[in-house]
Image (tube, rainbow, N blue to C red; front, side, top):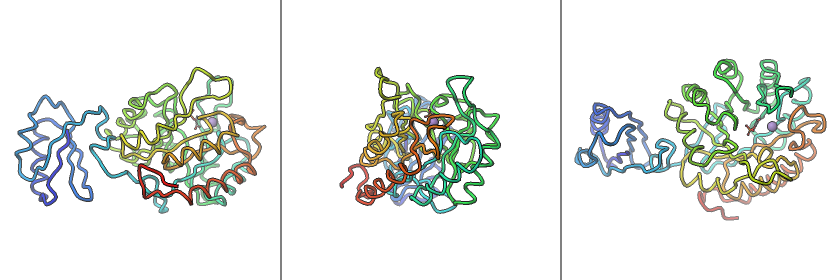
Length: 347
Ligand code: PEP
Ligand code: MN
C-alpha cells in the first residue's frame, strides 16, 4: 500500500502517518518526491482498512499496489532512480547512457586488461568490467583469478579513472569484493540466490543485477525487490538474454522489449548486455543500437585485447579495434537520441 501525502503536508503529519502504520506492524519506506511525499507501507494489507488511513491528516490518496514488487514499482516511486557515484558519474533517468566494457574474465598478466581499459576510457566508456570470480558451466574451465584479479581491476581504475564492476558469487567473498568494486555484479545464475541478494541489500554500494537465463520480468523485478527491501536502493538492472528454443546461431534471446517494459513498471535503471545476450561479437553493435533506441540507460559489452586467446567468452568479445569502431558508431547514435523524452525515444 502507498500513501500519497498532500503537497503541503507537514513533517508532523507525515511522521504521524508513519508512526500509525508502524504501530500496526507495517514497515515504512519514505520517498520525498519532487511534488509529493509518498509513504510505502510494507506488510499484510489485511491488517488495515485503507479508509482508516485516507482520513488521517495530510493524506491525499491511499493506493493498493497491485504488483508484488512494491519498492521497485513505479507506482511507489514515480521519478526514475538515478545512481550517482563519488566521481560524478550518474546512471539512470535522463542521463547519458553509460558504456561498461572489458573482458569476460580478468586473466593472465595485467597488460591485456590495461590495454582494454585505456581504449575504453578513450572511447568514452565509464566503467571497466571484468570477472575475478567466474561462474562457469564446467568445473574444468577457468574459474577466475579471485583477489589477484580484483587487484588488477583496482590498478586499472587507478590508471584510467574508470569505475569497476565485478561479480560476486558468494556471500563469503562479499567483503573482499566490496573492497575493490564500485558496482557489485550479481550474475544471471545467482539472480535468485536470495541469501546473496539479502547480503548485497545490506551493502551501501550500487548493485548490478543480471536477469536470470530463464527468469520472467516479474521474477527479475522481485529479485531486485529483495535488494531494495534489505535497504539498498542503488540497483541497476541488466537484461542479458533468456534461453530460447533456437541456440543454433545465438547463445540467448536478447529481450529488447524488456527495456521499455521495465521502464514502465519500475523506476530502476536498466542496461543491456548484448555480449551474453547473443554470444556473437558481430551482434554487439546492432543490439546495442536497438537497446539504446529502446531507452536503455547503458550497455555492457565484452572486449578483449586478444579475443581468440581469451579464457572465457572470446566469441562474444570485441577486439580493441572492433570496439573502437563500435563505440564511434554508438557515440554518434547517443548524440542523436533525446533522452529527456523518457518513455519515447525520438531520433
Ligand atoms: C558476466 O557478465 O560476467 C556473466 C557471467 O554474465 P551472466 O551472469 O549474464 O551470464
Ligand atoms: Mn562472459
